[in-house]
Structures are given as structure tokens and as C-alpha cells.
Image (cartoon, rainbow, N blue to C red):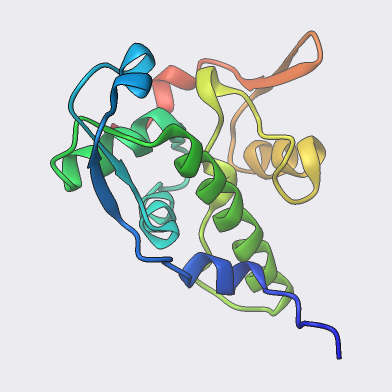
Amino acid sequence: MPKKKTSWTEKLYDAKNLPVVKEIDDKMSKRWGYGTMVIPAPIEVDEIMRTVPEGKIITPEIIRSKLAAKHEATIACPLTTGIFTWIAAHAAEEAILESKTGITPYWRTLKAKGQLNEKYPGGIENHRALLESEGHRVVNKGKKYFVQDFEKVLVK
């Protein structure tokens, strides 16, 4: 019998013994400096994404800053934070398909420098449409898309 596929929502709530705060080792210190790094739980990333009101946006850097402060760490892990924003987005889309309310407004979480995330459900087209429906102006720069003047609408 084939193994049942894990839903995005199940992944979101599977903490895998996270969060964990650990010392930044010598290898990682070349890039991140010294101190401590928190590896957050997926739901912690989702909780921050949920707080972004309509008309505002957030970036992974801000999410990481909030996580580091919460756990009294020097930094939050960039890799897992990015993966968990992606999981939160797909779990939210599952909730939409199940006609649930109170979903995470994942489209308000952009990549660095205000860039849209092509890995979100529905790709760039869906991400763009959701942002534009909330009044943001999306501009094309080469092969990438960005929210124009995103700095003015960032959640701090």
C-alpha cells in the first residue's frame, strides 16, 4: 500500500523538534559571523506571516529578525525560514481550496528587495494578481517581478 502523501498543512504543524538555538560554528561564521542561530519551527514563520495587514508586505529578512529577537539569537536560519515561508504559502492555498477562512496571507511575503516569489502557488501570475488586488503596483525588471516602492509598505 503506497504511503499517504503528507499535506502542506501537516508539514506546517510538524515541528520536528524545532525551534532550536545553536552556536554558529567556525564554518558558518565566515558567512554569518559569530553568535547563535535559531532554526525556527514552520508554524513560527507562519505566525509572523499572518500578522501582515492588507496593504503591507514583509520580507524574509524581517521575518528572520523577528525570529532572532523572539529566541534571543543573533540570527535566524535563512534556509529554513525560506523553506517555511514556502510551506506556509502552500498550506494556505490548501486551506483556500477547502473553503477555510482566516488563512495566512502568504502573498504579502516577498523575497528580498521586494521580489515576487515564483515558487508560491500559481507562480508569478497568481502572486502578482493577489498583490495587485490589494493595491500594490508590480513592475517587471528583466525576468523578475517586484513590488514598486516596496520599502514604503514594509512591516517593521
